[in-house]
Length: 156
Image (cartoon, rainbow, N blue to C red; front, side, top):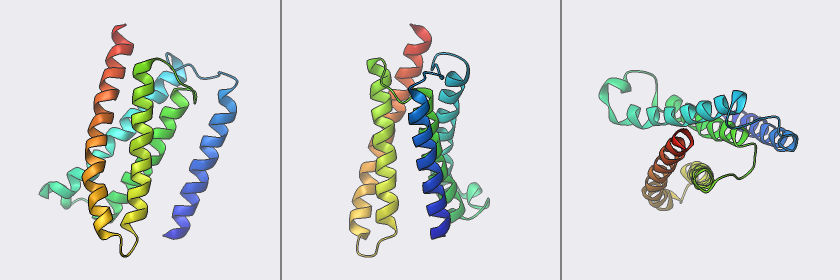
């Protein structure tokens, strides 16, 4: 398991690094084409993150796979959804509403990485429980900021 985590970390880091380098060439436009598609792809991947929570809460979903498998998919979506959004915004800041949504996403992603770290450490059970309580509100802030971003981009 640790080897696969390292492989995903290397792939994610390389993908971010490559995106950062090519962002200087302004190849991707968030308003059209591939940039627009990457925005919807990243948002969809992050929306799929909620299937893990649904799996834990709904009996009919518990019959579909193991919780650990769902958690692994949740983690992958939580890494590659935000990377798609970073490509969508061309690794740069834009309008105020998109900046707020971007920083909300980065905060939730960082929180997820911290939670992943705490979850697997002995002696951190209490801290993980406190993290869990704090992670949920920032997820809802992310959802709200993404909705505002999408509406403002399509209305104005």
